[in-house]
Amino acid sequence: MAELDFERGLERLFAEAPSFPDAEAFASRIEGRLARGWNMRSWLIGTAGVAGGIVGASQLIMSNFVHRVEDASQGSTKLIQTSIAQVKPGFDLLSIVQSDWMVVWVASGLAVIAMGFVLTKVIEEI
Image 1 (cartoon, rainbow, N blue to C red):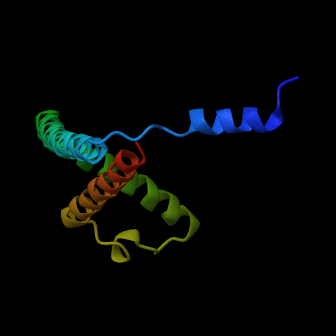
Image 2 (cartoon, one colour):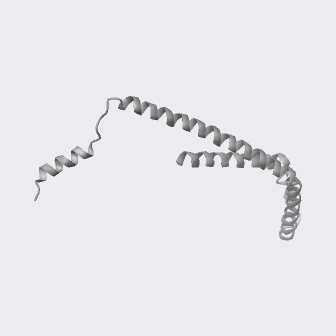
Image 3 (cartoon, one colour):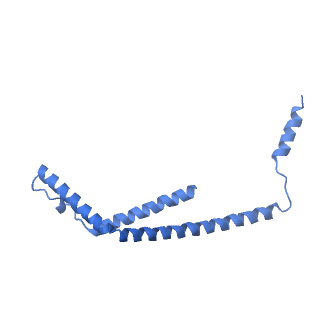
């Protein structure tokens, strides 16, 4: 059987990393490389986000998205009005809610901002 004190001392010696005379310079050099890498990554992620946003916006514009939303909105509004009119005749839904394109754009903008916050949080977690 080996001595217990000797084994513990040996384990401590191997657990401690030896110190080198240029350890501080090496650490600062590595930290500089990591900081430079993060800066480059953040620029690349931002550029990719802007490019993706431009592509997405152009696809929405070219796919006649506004006309489709308008058609869907008019169809659903008519359906809701007829169902409410059957329940309570004389109740006009449009008198309560004014349908305006500004509301659609504000809601879309808020959705984009929310997705940006979620994306930022996900990137921070990575």
